[in-house]
Length: 116
Image 1 (cartoon, rainbow, N blue to C red):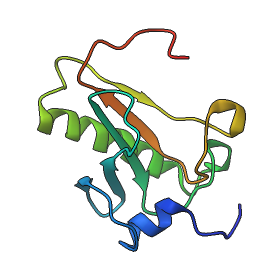
Image 2: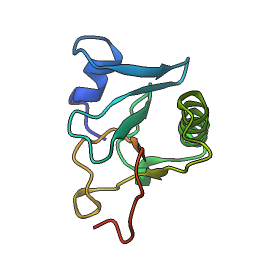
Image 3: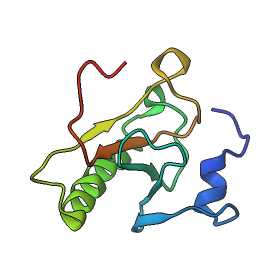
């Protein structure tokens, strides 16, 4: 893992503004600046885990907390019954551009498959 500060680190520390829609002790959720659906939120752990390959016994609970946060948010905004998609990308070929794991929450329209 690199020690370089990511944009997500700066959002967590409030150095860069973001439209925060969810926050608890472990997870931050904010609107994506380039939305791919009417509702597109990124959920990130408040600790840096660079990629899914870096998840281990000591930090795996953060992945579960991302999913719990997404479920809570879906209920808060009334999308839990309509349906939504959560996606995590890993490394360059997987589409990851910020090396701090994050989960995309997409909702607000009929989503198609395959995604791309």
